[in-house]
Length: 112
Length: 114
Image (cartoon, rainbow over all chains, first blue to last red; front, side):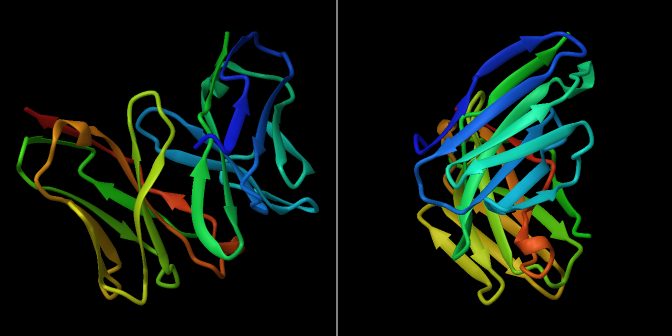
């Protein structure tokens, strides 16, 4: 869905580095989510935000932080990356009236 | 909290056959159940969803059934085609639990052999 974009699409970094993944959407949705996908483990929710002033932890928030800079932008940070944070990261959006979530193209992160 | 179990983890069928993927959920207050298809290297795409006030929903070759009493729901794909090969995820949400966040199953890798 071209209305939800993520940057970068691929990133290789080293242990201990700070990394920021960015998500932007033009769908006008108020809700935004960050998920992590590991092989065989499905999609796990890291953080979610229902509006600019509302940030909530998901199932696996340890080691991550987020910022909702505007309704259309939601960024995910790894303060000090570690190898087991190597994964595929997806941003998603939805609006408060309908529960359907729309995913961005994903960011493949490798921590060496 | 909600827990969603999905079976099988892999499924192989011949082209033209039907495929069925099953999910169970633990939170009886969950009321929204979407299914996503994820092709290799791509993002998950919503293919069908159902709410707890209906028992079945169809969209061409895809159907979803819901049994609220047993707390399980299933995805049915008829007349499978090679392009149906992908990983399929079910999910459930409870609007009264943290705003209705989705809890996903572990995924089913469907392979349709020509």
